[in-house]
Length: 309
Ligand code: NCD
Image (tube, rainbow, N blue to C red):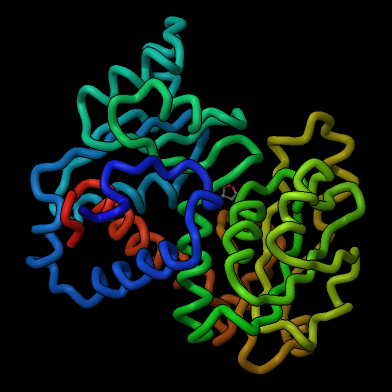
């Protein structure tokens, strides 16, 4: 039996290096298959999505990934149009949606929401973003992008800049990178440093430096992972205004980087990468979004098929 069959995908911490590499190999396979072969993978299976927060890429990439492997999807993209408005609990909504589907993709503003949903769901739950805690499928996509574009992960110097306090993609990426031999430089405003309650957990997995100055290691980086300041998660708008626009990656900064360095971003991008970087060979964030469709097709294919594909 394929080890991912019926497995919840709640935290990237639940995956070891060997398992991540298996997912990457399955993603390579998805890319190589022709569309007819791909559509055989999850023919007749249904994925349900339940999004309590806005999303463009994550939901649509799950949707299009499911279609590409021959399955269907149904769900709630706008919670205000669902029975949640009548007061239905998350537990009941999840139970109902798992009756109508073979796997459930959930995005929710609360930490712990996916783990809770997995406890009440009769079908595997895939975490598509839980509060500020984690976004494991984004990390799989990010790691796959690095591996594909740099041909390796081990040995790289990786800078992560922006909102390290509230950015859930950062936490999943750091836990995932903990499986590899990498040098990590964290760059953020003082008030948006990595959360102190997670530092111990991250330090168990990898070592990192912290700085407020994006230029400090810039000429040495192989990967610069840029994140959006998560305005919606600030308890106080004044605090957001103080850090808004702290870092802008533009052509001037790019000139100080290695010629073959890559720039990643989980997107959506606001003003933290200027649009004139988009046309450079270093900008890989749109490519990264495309890989997200293939990594999610691989994850769904493995979750839904006992013998894998
Ligand atoms: C991210 C998220 O939702 O955490 N978006 C995404 O899924 N690509 C990042 C963000 O919103 O800034």
